[in-house]
Structures are given as structure tokens and as C-alpha cells.
Length: 111
Ligand code: FES
Image 1 (cartoon, helix red, strand yellow):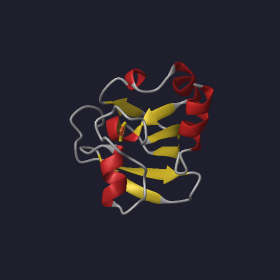
Image 2: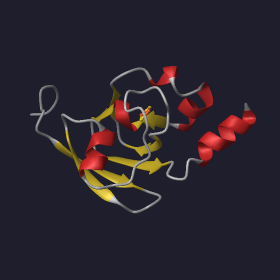
Image 3: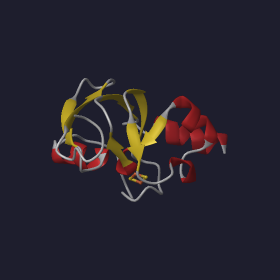
């Protein structure tokens, strides 16, 4: 059986740019799971408004807990960015975390 209501499912996350891996219990969001696993994952607001926790989703599927488009612009959405604090997992995933926050600086420069 798979599909809805499988709250105890555990998914695996691989961070492609650091090689770190951790597991996410289906109930909690990606950012919280990373923190629980002791992963250094940039974050600030934890409510989906700052964009600091963003990561590029390279493989797999997440569920948007709130609309990423409020915080991420169209270019970022096109590149596959997700907000970790607003994502729960629907499969194992591979992500690239914006650890050095270069994307933010570039973005701010670009205005
Ligand atoms: S920590 Fe602010 S958007 Fe996720």
C-alpha cells in the first residue's frame, strides 16, 4: 500500500553539494529534519518568508506546505528551488543546499 496517510514513512535526503545524508520522518518538514540530524542548514524565519533555507531539488518530490512563490522569484522556481522549512517529503530526495548563501547575494546585487 502506498499513498495517503502513510505518516510513518521515512525518506532519505542526500545533500549533493556536501555529501551529507539524513532521514526525514514523513510528518516533519525538511528543515526540521535536517536540524534534528545535526545538519547545518541555513535558516532564519522558519515560516517561509525569508528564503534563507532554500535548496535546489535535484531529484524526488516534495509537498509545498505554503506557496513557495510568495518568497522565491520565478527564476528560482524555474531552477527548482524549494523552501526547506515549507517542504514535507513525498519521496527520497537529492538537494543542493545554498550553504554559503551566494544565491542571495547575487540576487540582491541583481536588485
Ligand atoms: S527559514 Fe525562512 S523561508 Fe525557510
